Length: 185
Image: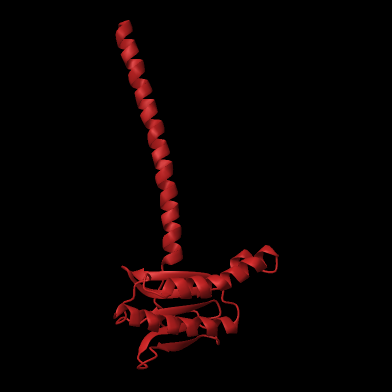
């Protein structure tokens, strides 16, 4: 037995409208899903770039070369250790002591250390990149990892020159000491 349903013209119009609404919703959801997937890719990239293992917690399982060493960064007035700089052939990681709580808005971190020192190095590298003397991947890069609003680690990748290591560590030491003084005012 075959059941044949007959619909009025009004019912067919309603069915077609419903079909169009569902099709429109499906398209909207596809666009939303694409946007969510793009956002997820961006978040994954950010997490990948900013995730880190504190250099102080790295064991013997880390890739170690002959040039790896650490330098304590001390506060000028009393000589207490406020951070440690871990130097490898690829990067300098400045890990602040757990007892040091500094916000990246505290002067002179951004104005001097990031903008003037690291920014100056980045401008020189960018000029070399523009002229073809340096690959884009070799341009100096600075990542500031935070715990809440406090700086936990400053990673400088692609420093490339021993003179830059010295300048980075010396200016980081000075900047962090001034930041401690400014935050105690």
